[in-house]
Image 1: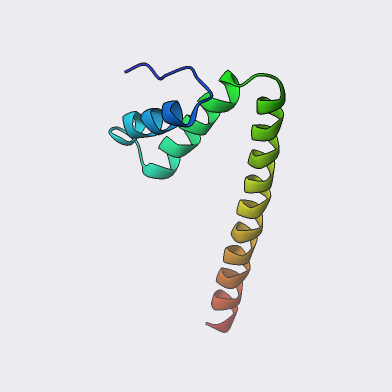
Image 2: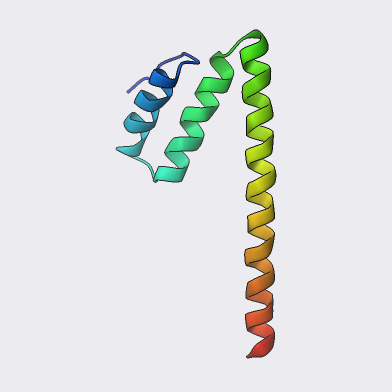
Length: 77
């Protein structure tokens, strides 16, 4: 099913619901946010890009802590 090409919150919600029918939740959210960023223009686009960068930085930090905890678990064994 085609996704809504819009930067609105309503379009984002609709796109996520559409994608969740056939994909895992995290992937559906990523696709919905990607469509929203691509459709945005001007200052709205800059704001979305900034929020995305913050989200990715936080995700990377969480990923590092998981890797570190797995390394310590393996070392203890």
